[in-house]
Length: 217
Image 1 (cartoon, helix red, strand yellow):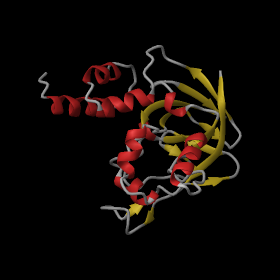
Image 2 (tube, rainbow, N blue to C red; image 1 turned 90 degrees about the vertical axis):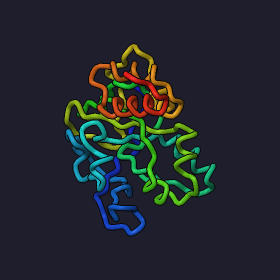
Image 3 (cartoon, helix red, strand yellow; image 1 turned 90 degrees about the horizontal axis):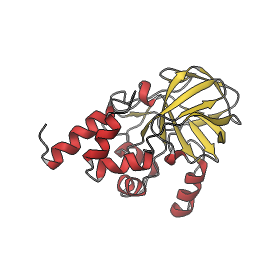
Image 4 (cartoon, rainbow, N blue to C red; image 1 turned 180 degrees about the vertical axis):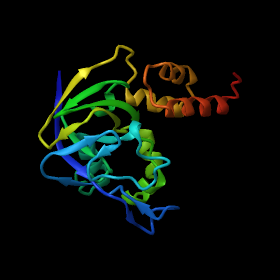
């Protein structure tokens, strides 16, 4: 099943930035590139992350965001938002990224990617966008985009089709999973934790939710 296309492939390396919080470095500024880019186990060739504790790794190797969502934010913020501005590696068109299921697999060009996590907004993102209360607003909207794991390395380029190679039957999409973290829904988080090959971060999210609710195991 074809979902849509990759409108642009965006990469960027860490740079010094006084506004970027404790590390004073960030790689959130991703820019479109021409031609194919290799998708590797830890991310796209020519791309990087500054905060390796909270970003990157196999479960967050690639980040995708829908152009349609950027267009919506563009209208609400009343300013242009270019491809890559949200720090996404893949700006898609025709793909309901937020409704992708955890564990859903996309064939893009020569690579096979697997949906792992929604994006949790941070203060660096808020400072970069320059909007007051951006973290709270982004969280409330739950238009998160998708982090992806690279299952098969290969080249990806603008114009490549996004083809669903596998769609699991559990029905838990990124929007639902993201909201479960803030709605204090440990039952749903436990379902996610039980999914095969789920990202380790879900276990941490469950533990946090249980602590908030005073659940003892």
